[in-house]
Length: 90
Length: 144
Image 1 (tube, each protein chain N blue to C red):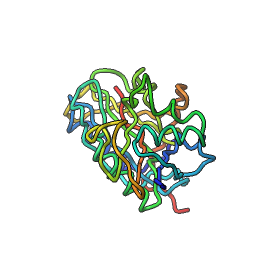
Image 2 (image 1 turned 90 degrees about the vertical axis):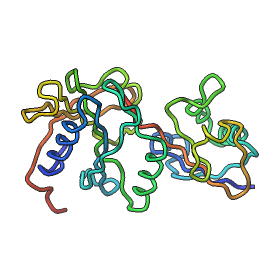
Image 3 (image 1 turned 180 degrees about the vertical axis):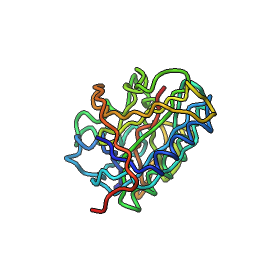
């Protein structure tokens, strides 16, 4: 099973500069664990206290995962995941 | 240093004035690695707040897909402060996640929706460290 994950600039330090990496998992949570195995440190940038960080957006096939189950969102072979830092401030 | 053309500068200031007292936000895109702010994109402040801004998550995805297709990146990320100076707030610093961008702050606190001088300042924000930089407004960006 292969899922393409698009990595934003700020997280490419964990992927040797790669813009996209491949991972697998039946849920977003499993995918992030799989990414952590190949790119140590990345999980902590996505998850805080067991939940997705508020200012990191994750999309599965263009859907914001917050609306489709968050970390429990299901994944299947060929899905595309996009990670984007929020653009926000005060 | 941020070098920006007069028309883009004016468009950012006009956006900030128009949206006052809500914070205005947007980007200026340019070819990847070029450091040339060429294409102004004004964004909706999904927070609709005088003290906070956030790009809507669907708009954000659309924006980055568009940038990808054009081999562009956000060269400038701007927003306005409507009651305080044009300096990054603690929130701005904590949430800055584009290490290659010039973070532009415009303050409309003096004149609000009306004409008159505004503060327009630019910063690099990397790993929580803020460095102010000079802003050069030129008639047009030079050719490369």
